[in-house]
Length: 206
Ligand code: OGA
Ligand code: MN
Image 1 (cartoon, rainbow, N blue to C red):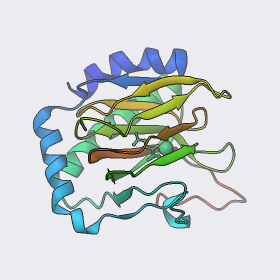
Image 2: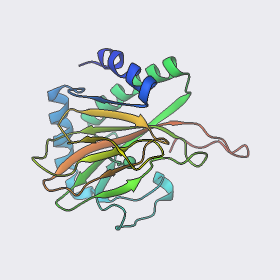
Image 3: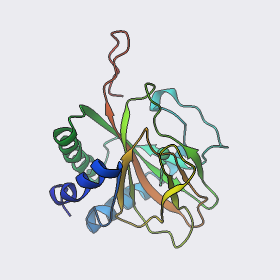
C-alpha cells in the first residue's frame, strides 16, 4: 500500500477516536529489508531508556526491550522515513498540527521483555503528538500491545503484533503497555513531534 491509500483509511479513524490500526500498511519487500537491517545492527541494540532521546533514564523495571535509533545507514531506513514524511505532511494538512519532525527507533523484545503501562507524552512536558508503531515480524505468541481508553483502566484494544501492521495514536491520550514477549518481537516505534519553544529556546530537532 502506498502512503496515499494509507491516508484515506487512517484520517477518519484518527479524527473520530484518536488512533488507527492499519494492516498491511507497508509492502513486503520493504518489511523484509527493515528486518534484515535489524539483523545487521543486532549487536548495537541497547537497553532502552525512558523519556526523550537526550534525557534518557534506564529503568529495567519499567521496560527492558532493546532499541536502536535510526541513523540513516540503510536504504530501508530512508525509505521508511520517506513514508513517514508523507504521513507527517498529510497529518499537518488535515489537522493543522505543525508537526515538524519524526524520530524513530527499532525495538527488539526477547522472551520475557516487556514495557509496563506508560504514556509516550505528558501534557506540556513533551512535544510528541503522534506515536507510530510498525510491527516487523509476527511472533507466534506474546508481546501483545494493550491500549487503554483515555483516562480509564478499561482496555480499548489489544493488538497482537503482525508484520506490516502500522498503528498510530495520540501520544498524550492513550496509556499503553507491551505484555511480556514469548517469541522474539521486532518493531519500529516512532513519534511525530511539534515544536515547543520554552523561554525563547527552540527545541532542537534531535
Ligand atoms: C513504545 C511502545 C509499543 C509496541 O516503544 O513506547 O509503547 O507495541 N511500543 O511496541
Ligand atoms: Mn509507548
